[in-house]
Image (cartoon, rainbow, N blue to C red; front, side):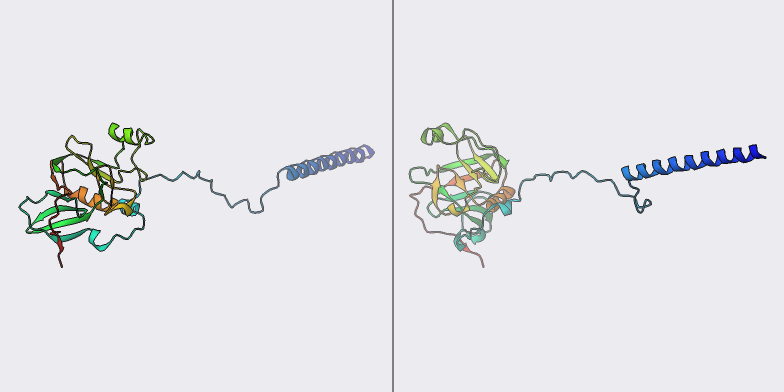
Length: 229
């Protein structure tokens, strides 16, 4: 009986020791990594945020807030002419571009033209169209302005603006501009510029092969384009 009591005492001591060791181990583990208060609530994985996709701005938003005079705004006007519908007529003295619609009417756009000594006249055709065109200044322009870049990729900062229509085998173009305040002035090296919104509208109405008539600066006939009410 004495031996049985002694054995039971030893078993109790061993059990107590194991319980103490387990308690210490659990305490150390809890201190190292505390258990969440609500283990049944799962936190969704965090998704990597993708960088925004860069896109070309809308052409209508490209023109800075410049209020053009009423006469230079795009409008349908009465314009008697024998030229076929679809023909472009550049009224150099009045800084207008007319797109003949037929039935005695035309769409009139305000334009910027060549500065003194850089105007020209004649008949050409549109041989190429381009959206957000690159700009490579011709050698003649580089010779006059050697500080110009040799090439500039298309985009909002490009002097050719949103669209360009190339005239025959010349260095001249009908194109947009990132300086809409120059519409109605004589500032270019011979190209004909419109606001980005207007050049986009014209671009959508004409095709390669369109006839373009550029009137000389000396043609002082009266402005024939009266607004259609």
